[in-house]
Length: 148
Image (tube, rainbow, N blue to C red; front, side, top):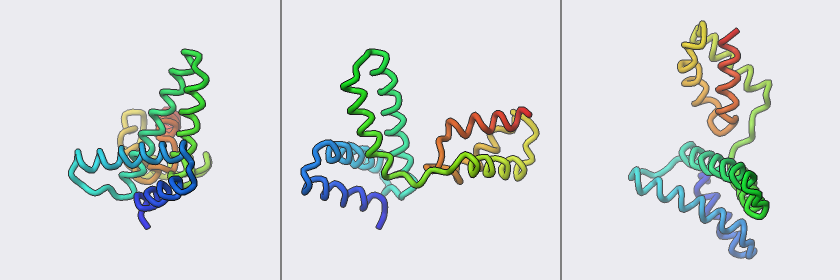
């Protein structure tokens, strides 16, 4: 079963269980997936669905930081709950040690010598770590590894 099919099944289950918050979040996710399919005129595979989910999670994180600045704790709670639901569809996150090992392997594979080679290393890691690690954090770790 593809990830998109699983999300659709979860929507049906949320309808049956009358889980309003979960249902709303899943509908937002399916709408974003459908929008991307219509815009690009393609059928999204699991990797593209994961990328869409990651984008939505990033939007929630940005919203949370803005709502915290405005002291809107009610909206922070809603966004945080949506983020938790969205994260259930991501693959298991890699540990810091696994990420560092992948970075070391990519650096040696590209023979990266300094910060100017960061694009090559990130290019390799993006395919390996997509959905499994926070790419913003990975970027910082790559930068630190290449500046040594």
